[in-house]
Image (cartoon, rainbow over all chains, first blue to last red; front, side, top):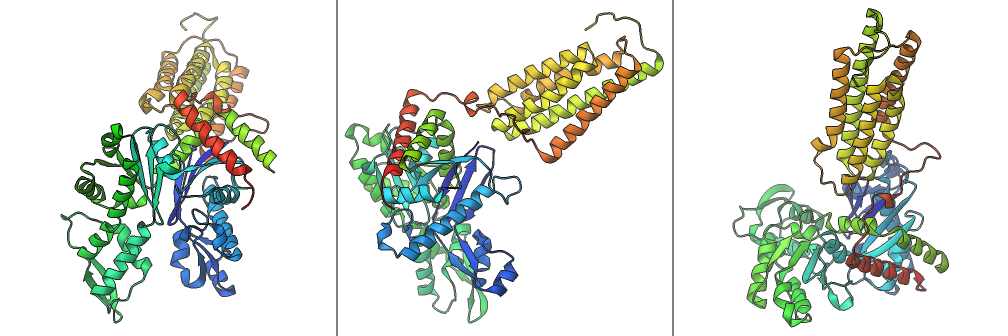
Length: 352
Length: 188
């Protein structure tokens, strides 16, 4: 039996398995547009970066974009949209699980896992995520993503985990118990918001430059920084068809900083609702995780902002921001006693 | 180990036994390297893998001679010592390899010294065949990885699991209950 921890993210989906395999895929699924593209690509479905590279020949889907499956009420989306998102999410999950098999083409026979869910996820969203895994995982449990991070780090007391993803920033207060709704805050100014702000700032400064949000995203992933000490940052973009180097140092810093106030506001909300006796302690234990936390200088920027607005603050960053959620979910999965899994299976049968 | 045995070997037999000794030594060294490599990859796979590697070896080794049997047991002990610390993955790789290194060194020295043993040519041939099979099995293991034979049961994950403490148990129970509640809800 393989145990896995899964973090299905808006931008990247990550899996960690107890056989030592850890991997991720960009959360894109592409279907060939016609017979020619099918012949050219040689497959019915293309995943991740490969799908993005060949997007001209594919119908691209991002199942977790906009939170249809993860945190939005599904009744607000059309049936077709919801169905398509569910199908593509299943494809991503299958792809991840296949990476665990020796030949990478068949699904390993017995796999059970824990899937991370956003702090905002409703019961209906959670149920959708569980349903996605039917027929792929033998048994599945769900747990809040920031809680998975905290569990992986063995932090249960007086701390706040800030999981910065592409679609949302999930904040979770750890107070020695399983976090409840009031212990969690989700903000929507995350990685994609930075991309949008950065794109707008470049357009404003260089109106003649041609660029897409994907170009901006790739550049940001390699160069995101807030620190004042960084070197000059230039991006090469086509201007009237000619590749031109453009200075975007100020723009990228401004874009990256744009998420900080809302994160600190979320921290403030969680601190304010905590036992006054431990408020100072909790402010000293802010833990950053998620792909977005890899921005250079973000930790210091949040600390600075906290000191200015909350009086004090100490922020640390997890060692492997991208894998922290999946690692924690894997630990949960492995630590779960066998009798709990049996209980879950019995309950699943009863529910059917 | 140093017991005197009936008779001594003639030159031809002695050469073959030395060859077997070199084979055993090489096989041990090889199996220890394979086990170490798997152990370094960590987790239950290593524990299972080590057990599977050890089994054929001990079967073969039993047939060689008394000192080799002792070596086999030492390896088994070594494997047991590997399995338990793997849970925490705290033991450095060198330490993991030490039982194998010790056994290999021990057997090597016995054969270098030319311990007097009495073995008829048929036994020697059968030993050579057994060692040949071990060699090819190890080569196959290295090439294909480790799979359990049909009907063979892997050790239960619970054998390697530490019971969570009370605090963690409560947390895990809450995760389970949340999942069960979600599953039981109608709709979606």
